[in-house]
Image 1: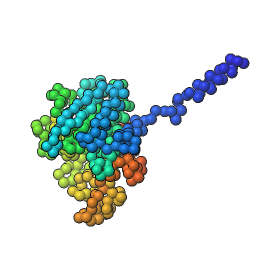
Image 2: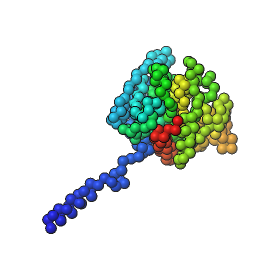
Image 3: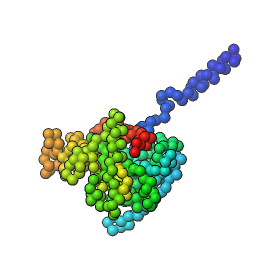
Image 4: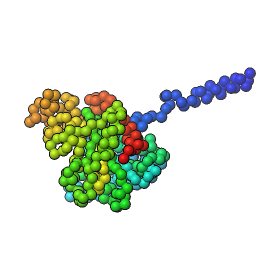
Length: 355
């Protein structure tokens, strides 16, 4: 009887310690991505706005480095200098690598600085979301051996001239460039009405490359991401042609540009809305048709009721709306959904690149 009672007691104790219940399951990569976004971009719960060249940008870099190192990654800290308004400035890139079966490299990048803080922006969509997704991907894949080596790059000082990505691209010798199979730029991947994926522009003149002969506008990375997305609940879109920009092609205004100039096929993912006739036409610089972000929006013309007097133009980036509390009010669940979808898609792409 004593043995039976003891057995029952042990069984009960083990049952109480059972960690297999749903309540104790580890969060998914998508859930982790949102948690990292909160920690990075919420002033109330984390760092908040990260103005380029400021103390918060430096704190964000340390925060990223601590996470990567905690997962066992060897982190390369690359300081660099740049000139802004005649003054010398400093920032840093953070680079970590997951060795694959091949030494060919897929580089995925996101900038961690932000702008618009004087207007109330906390840099949640631009570009806390891109950073959070990359961190969640790095965590989910740690210790795995994938078909290609994966390089995670977190760029500083993007908002005032792509300084981090330019410095990193310039640091690569010819052998390192030859190993770059692809570059994917995650910049503003959540928040806007539609998630798009772009290739580089078919006209090298759009990119002002130092050596135009090396330039690549190969759309294979864009097309592979598009194909994977169509098998999910959140398919990417290709923007329609607009003045100066053929269908699915983008300009040189984000961190993919220096790599296209090196001859690396790129893809650029962003959430915006190219169906809107914004202040400068159908250029994607209006992110939403939500009337709260317009003085007056005319759905019939996909533009402002009065183009001469409109002041808001449906913009999220660099405004008081680019913060998680405002986004939750205006677009309940959207940031979580788009961020999670982009996180899971990137994991699938890296496991099955198809390049």
